[in-house]
Length: 139
Image (tube, rainbow, N blue to C red; front, side, top):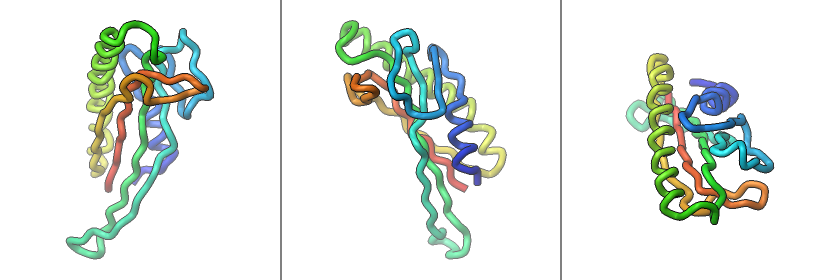
């Protein structure tokens, strides 16, 4: 199993098409020139014995990757919608390319990709259209 620090480093270091700036933690604010802006939220973990053997462990770690695309209320809703859907594809491509490395070490990688719609992610008092990917590693 990987460490929390390694998970933060790996996910925050993903190269995602179209992203102008990335950070390895949640920012206090985002400049317009930095959008789309990529960051991660603090990871979480869970430990539970495997019900099949009662001896093997089921340890998992999760982290959210967030890409803020545009402040809510700017541009048109249809333009923000299109930009958000395109970013979902870019995030999925980056995660798919990355998940091969953990799998080679016997880890299982799962991820889900969702959106915040118009204003679901708030940074520095501003709401953003954003893509949020939850990445979970088990092993």
